Image 1 (cartoon, one colour):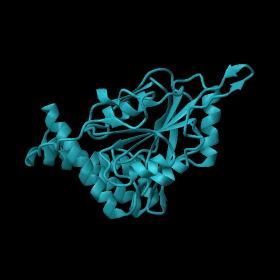
Image 2 (cartoon, one colour):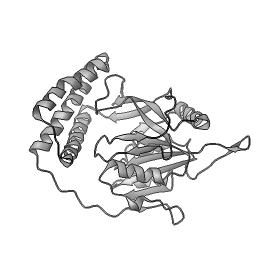
Image 3 (cartoon, one colour):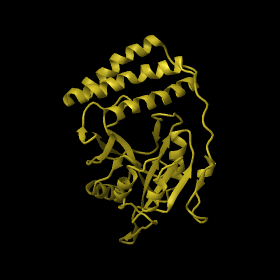
Image 4 (cartoon, helix red, strand yellow):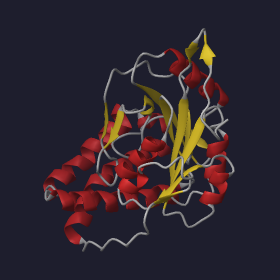
Length: 288
C-alpha cells in the first residue's frame, strides 16, 4: 500500500480512503522509519521542503507522490501537501513520529465509521529513549493534536512557529492509542530547538508590529513554568519535567528579547517549487 490510491466497497458502498501526509526538511535520519509505519494508508504524500540530504531518495522507496519546493512558512507547505492528497481522510505525520500497527488499525476503523470532520490523537513524547508523559504544553510540546481529518477540514495559520490551526466541522472522539513522537535526542537537541523556535517567534513578533513588553514577558516566566510543572503535572517526571517547564517558561522572554535586541536577517532566496508526480498527477504546489 502507499504507492497509489486504493479503495474497496463494503456492502456495495465505497469505503473511506486515507492519505498519509509527511512534510520534511532534511530528515534522512528519521524519514525511513516514519514512512515504513504508514503502509496502512491508501497513499503516501511527501512534501520535500528545501531538502539537501537523502530525504528524496528515501521517500521514493515508499511513494511516487512527492512535492518538492521551498516555503518560508509552515502553513503554505502543509497546505501544498493537503491539496495533493486524493483521499477522503488525511493522517498528518511528521518525520519524527511513528504510527504503531495497533494505532494504524484504530485509524482505519475510525475513518470507516466516523461522521465527524476531525479527531485528536494522543502523543507519547520521547527524549532519547525515555518516554516523558507529563509537563508538555505552553508552545514547547503537545500531548495530543488533530492529526486525523477529512480533506478540507483543517486550515493552518501563517505564523512561522506554532501556526494556529482551525478545524471546520464537528470534532469526533479522541483516539485511544498514541502517536510515538521522538521529539529530541538529548538535552542539547532540546536547547537547540528552543533557540530555533524563539528565533522564528521573534520574526513573527516583529512582523506583527507588537512585540509586547519586557515586564509582561518577565511575568510569563512564572505563569508558564507553573502551567507546565504544576498544571500539566511535569513534577511527576522529576528533573525531566523541570527541564521541560523551564524551556517553556523561557520561550516568551527569549522570543521577546530576540525581537527587540537582534537585527533581523534577510531571507535566503529559494529555488522554484516543483513536483515529482508526473504530468497526470500535478498538484497546486506551484501556486503557493
